[in-house]
Image (cartoon, rainbow, N blue to C red; front, side, top):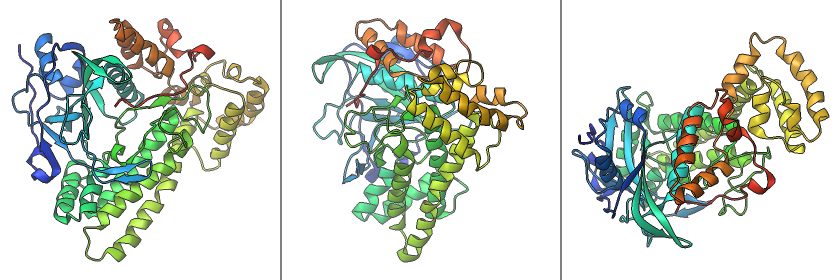
Length: 472
């Protein structure tokens, strides 16, 4: 049986200025590691035999209807503008419209050199591929908008980084791969016709109710405000929030040096390349606003009366911090059992977070324990929790079912960094059991799973992962 994908490739029908035609580069000995059958069914994909799927998802065989391209974009990287980036190691095979009516991209990541590789080999090694597979699927299960993983394949070829490492290809699925940087490159080049065409395409694809460029800006703002609040609520740190990694669909995209907090610390940074803490946990809301301002700057270029549009765009962007705070309050309110948090509840939440930081409390386990027992045990000084608990219990008396609210809002399981690293180390040796186990457990993060209690445990001191690395 041959893999069948019902392609409908709208982006490839745009003018050539938007991309480069780019077939993936074949590999020596592809072997299928994982295939996401549930996602495939949603996308209307009929799976083929394992060997055939390995050939397709490694890039050795193009499925019927594919139009392989690499997309063009630019972006601000750590605040500095790079005038041309693009898919340096990815090929967009095409799009499907799923059984739910949603259009999704299918992209091979790590499939070889492209016109935008800038001297790189265009390949990925096994570790980042497995990390993105596990973390993106975990984020989906947590209820966080995200790209997803359809397949992972070994290439049978080494990739050379610090040394020789096993190569792999990830098949990534996204609502689209349109980024803030996609708009920036046409604005910076003064290619207003392409900018207008891109704006119309983005509105049609993602926000059909939006009216013009400022309507698009507003819709992206609202989606990003919801997304960032969701990140904060699960203790997620993206690690590299450059504008080329900021999706206009409001999905989490590009899982490079990402990580989840263990001990709560608002200044947490994991990315080895973020030496100044630009993308620390607590900075993510401000960076999202900064990125939106770059999108606004690009969109304004297509207006004749730019001065008037600057004022309107400024108002849209300046409203974003309050929207993030509103979403943050609703999310963290639910984490402490409040179905409808009020403005004055922010102090109660912030007080708990400060006490958690001072007492080395585990972020995920503390909030999960609020609905049961043992939250105070997360604190080096349990009295710090006890004195907070009094006011919290008083507040909960007006809530109809705070336990149910907390259990829906607080996962028992996240993809903890030390477990990810252990999983990668095992896979490099040919053992994929930890990879498959993580995927199985993390697919139900809000359920009690006694047999997986070890995956909920915070790392021991010798297991702590102090830094994460970009997959390139």
